[in-house]
Image (cartoon, rainbow, N blue to C red):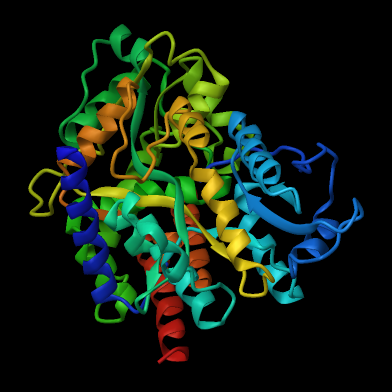
Length: 461
């Protein structure tokens, strides 16, 4: 509990500092969509038709319908369907359709549903400006009354509830995960070359040089997805300048042409030139797991990824049971005054909202609660997830290393692409990928990002 108190304080400091400075905002594999009540396939169009108003008769005989979208994969897909089934068993008047979406197409699918007026009854965002925009546009329901009932919100970390709150109203429930990015490494590879966890970026570069000399890719990276590579950019900028450069740039009181962002881009291109990333990284798709396979079999030694990576490793390899998975926080930058304890991530990933169009918002909120019942908590813990609740405990060694990192962190830098408005976030991800591909200079990339941010600010004065 002592660790979680520190984490709550750290999360609140970071979120409050960003919220005051600015004006408002992954991981999945493909799988077929299934109807949780009868395991029948449903295409997106038919699911969307049933999701608009939620209180429609189904073909099975007058039941009320609710539809939920998620992007979880592997065994968590079944866990979602089982939770929906528990809700239906306890509420036989309702039929729930659970739709699994791919991570990288999810935002597009959501935008299409908004434009068509066919939002599902229950869906998630990653918070930040996107959630705030949805609240302003009347797309998500105010859940404050339900969260306050029986002090339900008190079970969550304060920082997680804060991420769901806008203009003193709660618009989402943080059911999914404390997601923090760090460097996962293959212990077998490190042991083979007598490598130790680095304290500084200079130490990390020495490790990478040793691995390159021995024909091992230092980092597995699947960057056709863009957000994967952008984590390097975000961490490097944060290690150079702390939280302020991003917060100021997002608020319009600073600029993305700050030295912190120039440093991040230059360091990435230096690492590309030195061969620190697996071959073909900009053409690899994270959803397909290509880069992860290099990591599992020892052809790549490290992977900078969010803590959900533990679930991927558990589902796809035997590294966990063989004690081959290690973790260390992103190293400190020598001669920088920035706080090296800062972590990149979010305190409560996947924040679930109820559509304002949903005819039975109370039932939809009740459905969300089944994704936090005792069984679902057990399912998440078994997958190495860190649930954003105050009494969370784990016996997973890697999870506890991440908790140790969080407990000593002074704050959290929220993912850029989730905090920024969607049109600006896309520019950030694209320019980051172009930096990795060396088709653009860091200065050109930062100017494009700054221009996109200024256009958004001018439009939304």
